[in-house]
Structures are given as structure tokens and as C-alpha cells.
Length: 125
Image (tube, rainbow, N blue to C red; front, side, top):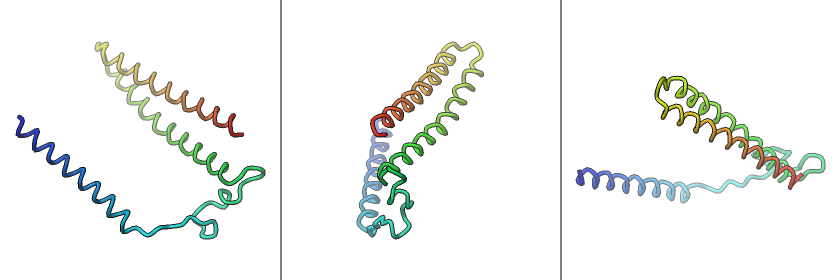
């Protein structure tokens, strides 16, 4: 048993070393890319702004919207999986409790994200 554990530890250390080496090699080989408004890399509204908002504010609004969309898209399948677990739990109260807890955690997380978004919009109009 301890022999298998030591092999797992060795493989884990080797994998970690390989990932670190690959990251450093990527950083060493990569050429820097400068995001300039004239190159078309960035959206023009991030450079010029919209109305009375600066470009950085427009960019932050877009990023908050993107992160919120991703959170919503990720939450739906997790709620569906928890609902499926609850539906198929039959007479197992442990599975029912786990599914209810998972759904509650997801909903609370989404509510917290919405409140954080509202606070950010209130602090930085």
C-alpha cells in the first residue's frame, strides 16, 4: 500500500514539475503582444468610452456582464443535477438532504453575485 502511495506521489510531483516547466517555457518563448486601439485587438468602445463613461468603465461593465452570464450558465446544469439527485433519491434521506443543500448553496451564490453587482454599480455609477 505504501509502495503504491509513493508511486502516486512521484507521479504527482512529476506532473507538477512538467506543468511548471511548460508554463515557464511558454512565457520564455512567447512574444509580447500589445493591445493597442489602432490594431483592432480591443473593441473601440473600450478605447474611446461611451457617452460620459471612460473606456475602462465600459470595459469593467462588459466584464461584469460576461462573468454574470457565465455564472448563470454554469448554475443551471448544477441545479438540474441536484434536482435529478433529489428526484431519484427515492427513500434515501441523505441524498435528499444533500440535493437540497446543493440547490440552496447555488441559489445563495447567485444572490450574492447579484448583490455584489448591485453594490459595484451603486459605488461606480
